[in-house]
Image (cartoon, rainbow, N blue to C red; front, side, top):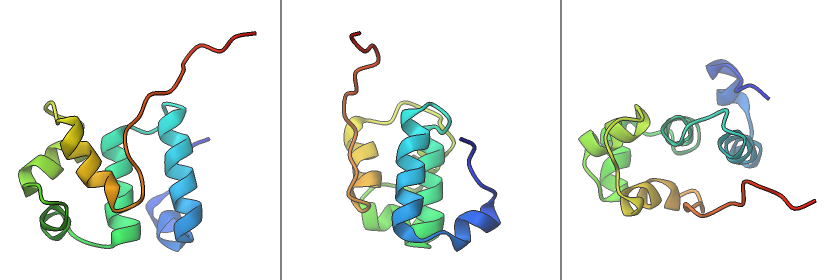
Length: 97
């Protein structure tokens, strides 16, 4: 699965976009920063300053997260994803069987 182009993301229904982002992150095809950027741009439809303020983090922290730079705290990442009903968690990478 590849991430659709920006114009296709803009046309996608919210629920479908959320599923796409979740699956893309889980499969390793999309970074957490890429996911944050897509959700902010295409679901929240806010610029970085507005979205960072809404999340209670600095714009610089949000920009670093979206660029996959620095070492954001789990709390900061959860603040970014919370508005979409998402949070970080553990997932088994090896399956029995």
